[in-house]
Length: 511
Image 1 (cartoon, rainbow, N blue to C red):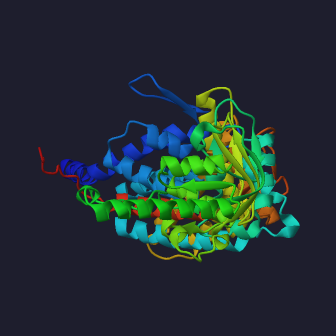
Image 2: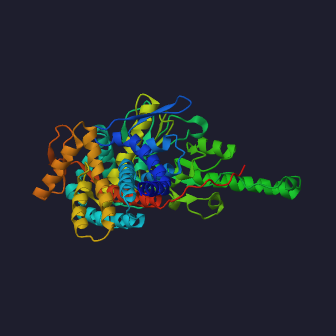
Image 3: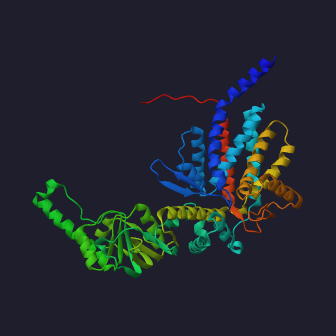
């Protein structure tokens, strides 16, 4: 009889060998990032086989730079990458939530709870938690706009210089622009080695002017943007050998020169081109004091058009007799060539307010990490403006966990074990923050949970300096609500996908 029971247990373990294998791979990723969470979190050094290294505490950077081949681990990395692209922050939290969800699920599955019942419980608990977060969030308005400083401070690792840079840039860009779906505030960050940190009220075009005219300083400049080349219409080689073909060539040159003259007559100061310019046309423009910038990336041209109020123009419009160029021109308060940047500063354009935040350090490695931190902080700031804020430091997750304990008590059936898995996962961020601060995580977590229940204050957390329980909202330890919601949703989806994998098979070889 005993042998029969042991055989059944062995069979049960064998049935979940694929799940155990996948969860072990996930746990390996979690162990790489959990030590970075919180204000006392440490950095991670990643060294490749060429001896090149990265020092960072950014979850998605660690995950994507690690040498990983396990399919389940790659699923989690893809989820973290999606969170970074969509929200720009919260990848470490999402990874930790996923790891704990799977670990707790495996514990109950091995005790006989159905995977499908676990998944149903997880779905229910995550939906209730998202609703709780949405009800708890505080919108960013004119009265509490200064809270954005706290958001940047948390995401930017307490870098006060970065707080000033991003807050000033956000004020210049404006709340309305930050709300746009197609505008990513993080894209205004540029990391360049060996310079000073600054906010430019405009943008940078990283191109050297044609003719190497580097002493450029134009006030109230008029700008023309061509998403085209600026050359005469060409003829086939066989036509050039005929009289009519040669006459057409001469006519095309004349039309081209007339078009160049229109640019000069319009008193345009600078012309930006997506492609090339005819050397003679370039010389005519340069002689007239007009700066020519060629081979500008389409993305930069699009940003330039928005910044200056210009319109894209094709060269064919230059050849129409009565075509007015004025409607296609943009304006900028200042256009300066900066040799250190190896490009042009377009300042105070007449179009949509645009800013560029330059961050720099003495070495390339530090500059790259500083740029990464600035981008995370900028993403967090924009997410807060769009969807509001909640208490940080794991407080909102713990609040959700306590709410779910009441839900579990009123839930019949085995789905309550899935709710338990989410409760365990929601406690994990604060657990890791406390642990990284050097305190006993179980003791401090229990103290905080008890204080939450007794005071009905849902924003309590642990001070990482003293270990005392305090109101994190009052202490301005806050996070964007969107970061929390997306992390929880993504963790649930990845956990569900991995829990449903019953068997791992080797695929065909295509070699």
